Length: 267
Length: 293
Image (cartoon, rainbow over all chains, first blue to last red):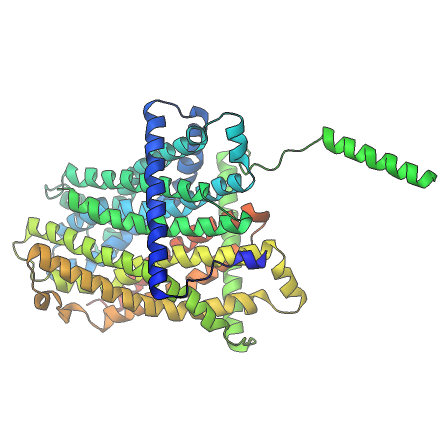
């Protein structure tokens, strides 16, 4: 048990290590692509389990509300604290709403919400699917002629994307409230000035929609990564632990990489 | 003679009962009982208070053992390798992209208001040193390191290795948590300084490629003062201390087999990320009061 607990040994040669990790990444990315195709097919043809979808929405979405609330309120306050020296230096109180607003709506709210939900939901999802693989429940499903993709993966993917989309809207609103009241408490900028700066025309609907598009992309990546790693668990209970760790790391890296490309592609 | 037959009969009855009552294995899909609103909020509050008290206890005991504990040769170095070297690639990739994202977005937004980007680099470097390098880097470390610590200690709890330690009069806090605590504080600081360098480099290249901003203009350190540096380093140390304490607490309170390890990992990631965000808020507020610029 203890021997299997430790992660596999690092390859001895440097080039070999690079090659191995490249092949691993390629295998995971390819697996995620194939999984994405299967999930899209089941979603378009409505071949997914509705009851499981509702259960996952409750488990992933409703139960994540406290984390999203805390994260968003603190994030808003942090945004104002970071903008504070600049605002004070130039005396530009009217620009506080714009500064905190564009940072929150375009980047921070989608990013931090995705990271927190990745930690809570993504890890949990891998652990659950991995435990089902290890205890051969997936094989049991196949024997019963129940498609595991339609029964397990597609509902989880849809639930995770939906959760992240609505959580980001929720976080946008709460973070702006947190920012407005932190600005009031710390800098003496009244909330009306803050919200005027927010709506004075420098920020448009495009910024909000850009953030929401990001959240959908992050949701898809998180869902596919966590399902892929969960279904690929090997080696009993310690394997589940390793898969959970790998999922969280892979999704977090994927979220940042895609954040750049989506931000680049959006006008 | 009679004893063997009664024994056999007993065994046969046991086997028959096991067949008829065959309990399905736990599915992992545990649904919680429905509770009222007041009960839910109250239970959450009590839970949070209890967790805070336990975290405080783990923290104080770790600090105590840092000074009066037994030293195990090489344990801190092994943890430094585990926490530091193995996070290097991950952190480099993430912080490289962070530098590109921030400069690109900030440049676009600034161009909506101001025509020139002379101060983009200076502002970016100030923000990076004071907050973003430490906070975003440590959110990433909380994910990777926190999950690793909780999974490792959690599986030791489940396989009763921690109980074995206690039986051998070795406090798990001294033997397991302390090396991770010290290693994490050192390596977090080192990694954050490295990742700030990576983010600066990628941001500089982005500014050059997209906004035609010369590297000499970009690398303007005039806005970075001692206060920014102090706040940034204080954040590194605070996060580096918080992540192993929170994750080790999640690991040590694991219960319920391999599934429990999964839960402990999840809890460690969420709680250490929250710890980073809350500490960021506190240190930023204190820094704003102490170094008002």
